[in-house]
Image (cartoon, rainbow, N blue to C red):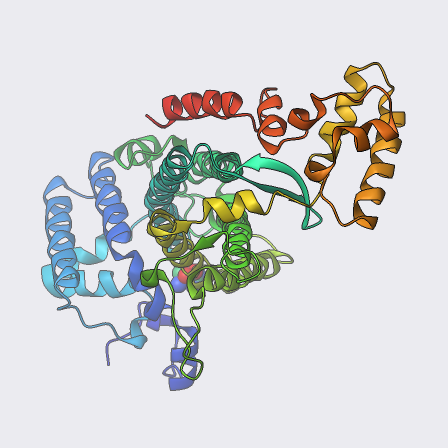
Length: 458
Ligand code: ARG
């Protein structure tokens, strides 16, 4: 059993249960590359500041690099007694290069070290997640372009409201993803500051060059307050919050895919490759993938709340509670990456039942607003027009007809301003086509937005 780094002050060994309870090595080992990267920069800075010699720094850097290789090759033995990845690597370093390894931790605490590691780790993950988001945006654009003419019912209150282009509906999710991307951009800015040099909490008595370390590791700048540096986990919470919004968006789209693939809607069919069957009901084809994305949204929200709650009454500066940041963070990273990743191929391979969608726009009075707008064009105030069309809808319900079934004479019975052209004015095609306003569903407006989007995605 190796001695603890703090064993000088202790006379008793750590209880076995306490040791396991205390340890974070089972999950923070994922930070090893970033821990080593940070240590290398720290060692170089120590030499530059004359705190250790250049020769010692070289030895340390060499040792760290070979430890990285050991871990890469799964040859590194992780044990609870070394508590966390920081101590495990430091211990191995001394085994490999001798007592000089013990100089690495000069002017550093695990408190600023772990803050650095998480920031380095999260920077990489944010970039990767942003790429995944971009990829999903491209897929949304792709599917929107392939189905440009496809008309479907648009809903409010999940009641048919007005006809829209299916592409317009998909591009609404593009806009959500665009904001998600930007949120990670903002988050990255606050992640990208360098906490090393804060020491345990109060800063360091050594002549450290914090700018050098920041520069070496590609950070924008060193942090400005040592207490804040070791106890700030805002950036983790912010990340989990941005991730929660991504999940909320994916969950809404999931919900739509689930509804649309039901027999009742029948607007789409997910590919067999992204569906599953039932072990008892032979006829079933279930949308498990979007259901699971919807379900996993709960755990990502949970992670956000767990972090907020962990941090909410911690006095400054570092408290061991903060060790609880990692599992919530890692689980969030893993979950949203998986969910974003699976969406693209699922959307690319789904079948779109264009006829069914168009069919669903019929008979439900979806163009009643257009009929009211027709009256407005003939000089009738909108409120009055709204009332007249309301009467017509009631008449249609009584006589079991759709608006499109009414004869011109029937229209005229409700207002003398109706003419033959009402037939065209209330067609779903005209309804869609008329909404040319910026951000509207007309083919012309959607094509224009697509052009802008494609330019932005390049
Ligand atoms: N394993 C710890 C964590 O993840 C590292 C920092 C420990 N610091 C300390 N003073 N015990 O937060």
